[in-house]
Length: 474
Ligand SMILES: [Zn+2]
Image (cartoon, rainbow, N blue to C red):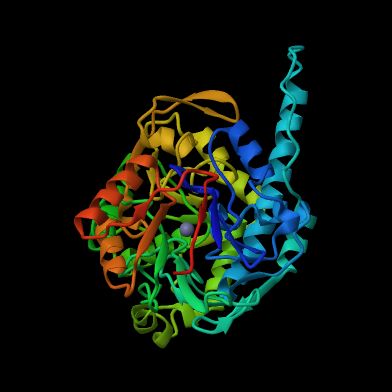
């Protein structure tokens, strides 16, 4: 058996892809989209470190685009096998992948039109067409096979897999795999964390314990960080909303359409119920968020006890309240430009790289009255990361903009386990012999490896991107 770390490895956080070769079959764990510098992005998302035609099955940990977003390219390049996921992940991907294709198509049209309008006469850089379109996304969705949590399935002979709730986003799973080697008559148990969630996240259940595991492929996005406690989220959010109301400006919240947007709405709903924020309009400006929220509503089996008690049992909707508007059409989105604050606009993409959030930032970032609230992880070289770093001048759609709006960062929202969560979770796994650290920037990987050593784990590896490791049955 071999594992090839073909993405989100060696210091990379996005583009999760790990290829397991067993008995001559290839099983791919995740097929995420890489996000970063535009050229690198294009290259990494169109060239795999393996041949897509030789992949027999894909097992998908969760619906986040950095784990699922490159599946249509895989399909476009010849993969025609099954994609296994939980039911909620399949339903979410249905919208996520179509949206990803739509966004690429729209952005291409927008830039093409803008460049045509400019008529500068200068030699223009050639625009790249989308890496996949809606047809590819549709075909990909047709290859999904969804499975309940804790049910076993066998993607290839000699391999048995089950999903356990990772508590990270709706439908997220830890992938537990058992391999049987006919020659040595031995079993090998490997688990891939995908992204591990935190205990106490709103809406979701806590990460579920997994059975005995010898080899763990673990994320470590926040391997050297400790998050602010979730208990402060309500209070901090109230302070920021009240501050924007005083300034009379707009509070712009770039947010992943999936999970984070629903969580923000959930918290605003609670603040609203407790009368801790003034009565201002709140817009969720993302057609994807609207669809994703519908998927949330149709999968209450994934909710935690708290959500049941606070909302479901009372017949309340955790995702809707009076002053909240979900905007669908592009015109409704544009109309928000002409509306005066105070107001809250929640829009995607979460790392400020694509989608409607770019238009809102372009229109509002150079006004002191406004506030940008960053609530999610921002990968290196993304616009979101530049804002977090406090850059005073940024490029939006290739044009420079002064950053005059306040920029606040709240990391308490993180849906990722931090160092202590990871250590605690790993500490409960029985039979663990080796850990591969992936999905973390170099600093996080090294620091977390150190923490694991201090906790008595001797066999830890940080594979390089593209590295292939032989796994013996012993
Ligand atoms: Zn994730």
